[in-house]
Image (tube, rainbow, N blue to C red):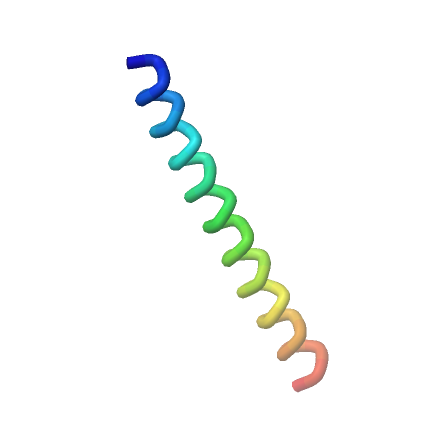
Length: 37
């Protein structure tokens, strides 16, 4: 039970990290376009 809940929380944290990285990449691309275009 405890191990299963730990896996679920780790998966949600991993998903949050992926969303954060995708958002940072998107913002960097937008900033890059604003600077050079």
